[in-house]
Length: 188
Image (cartoon, rainbow, N blue to C red; front, side, top):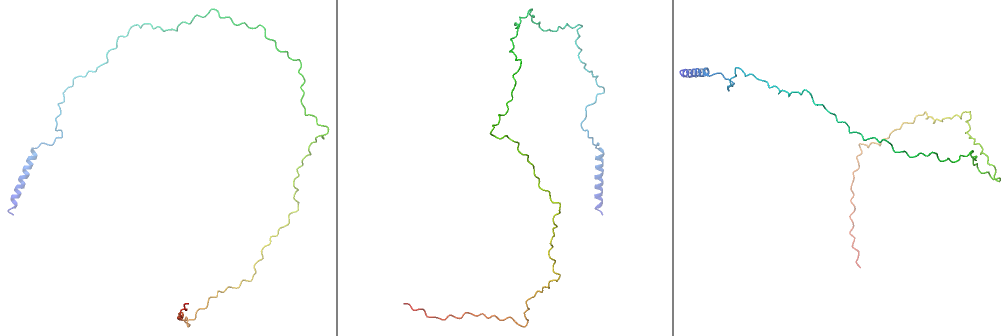
């Protein structure tokens, strides 16, 4: 408990020092650079006008339009035309009547050849009309009906079962009989 008071006094002293330093500082001013002083009154501004136009002349000089050059002199007399023939050449004499025109006919037939006669008329023979009697009736023969007697049933005959009492026969392997030793054939 005795060590508590020195710490409290130091903390209060630090708080008082910080409060005095903060009170002496000025508040933050973002405009740190000073602007130039604004003049109280601006000088009058004079607008520049256009320069005056040159004096307009009282009367313009007359304007003369250039005309086309004069045409060449027209000849007083034209050259004479070539003489026109007084009479035309005579036309060829036109026949008073044309000769008769004879149409060339076929040469006459020789008297030995028979006179050509026209070919006989060709008559188209149509096929004969069908007879009015109707065609004979076609009788369709049906297959004979099946016999009414039913077929006998088919019985499947299975093979007879082996009897349980009889056992399968024992298979004995028969070895081939030993070959008899035969003497070799005599050598001649």
